[in-house]
Image 1 (cartoon, rainbow, N blue to C red):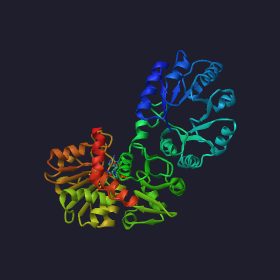
Image 2: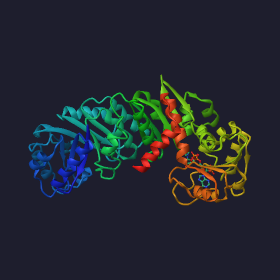
Image 3: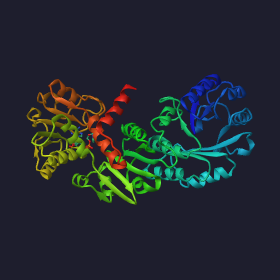
Image 4: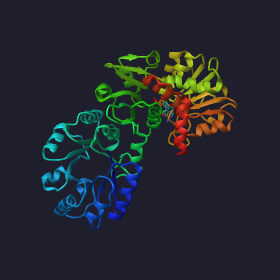
Length: 477
Ligand code: NAP
């Protein structure tokens, strides 16, 4: 059940927001009374149209209630007699649930760590007489995320278990399949906690999270900015596939990948900086992934981990959508990192004449030698000498106007692929467009590689055009 968390400055505002939450599809509301100046609790409870939770958080528990602990408990006891469906009482308060006149959600918030023995904690809280337990802890490693997800899959009692902070975000979604309540903000930006999904997120983008649904995701650092959830969840929905795709912000990949099948995870997109780690974890690599030495797609099936790389074909497909074929074309690849390696592999295999330029010469020269490409030192490469430019560095991704190579020096009529997709037009792209080149935005490469991942995981048809339609819809929304 989606529970909209409402923090209002007074009870009538809370009732209005609760009505809005119900209209958006929330099945319950949690009213945080921390900021109320008065407490007409019976009137407030009567005004609510959905099951309701009343709670008051003290500053020590991350809240704003200014009264004493005795006053806080006394108001919670009063709320339990006033018609609310539940009161949320912190475990640390030490007040037995039996003292309250309605069902109690016994809660534990750990804002700094993910303590050991989560299952025993949950069982102990249920045994104390809680109707349901809420455990919100702060994961600081991939292993913590795995522990939270394990408990979500087999909760020992009625429970809502999830992680706080950026690493916890994925578990707020995965937990919704089994949670007693999934806590959400009314709208993006109106949350009572950072990284809380919104009600529209849960009823829309992440509505695939349900018991038995397959889990997919993107693992990276950062991962929360990824377009993947928007795209893959829309593809799953439109093809009637029971699955959800979530962003795993993480410090490493291995614990998640090793536990994937146990956690119901069927596939992961892998992004910076874990593409090499993914290649090491995989039991079986496709020839492309093996030759590139980097994996952006992991599939978990039958106890085996398969690794693929869809970046290489995405670069070639995106360019060929403009040029017809890349065979024989001269291409300057700017960069020698993971994405550039995929580009050089794909383009060389497809018969393009590739030159690499890179800040660290040795790295660029090694990559060129591996594929029989040429190397030109950064600053000496002449962009106007090439049919195609491929920008494969993160320079310009902050919208800061930086460029590894000046786009304005692209040849009129040439094709320029910018891998960055945020911002949608980088300084490099803008310069190339001004020079009369045809620019392919990073979103198009993203669309090709995401569609290929979707096909690998599901076998269902999907093309870059489907993904671009989803992305355009997002822009228009
Ligand atoms: P990476 O492995 O970290 O490689 C970064 C490359 O950029 C290296 O060649 C590095 O040069 C160079 N570089 C970084 N900072 C630089 C600077 N200040 N000056 C000059 N060169 C610099 O990263 P990656 O995985 O290849 O990703 C590169 C970009 O492509 C990222 O922005 C990523 O988001 C994007 N990408 C987009 C897609 C898509 O679908 N659109 C897919 C994959 C990647 P050194 O060798 O000297 O360090």
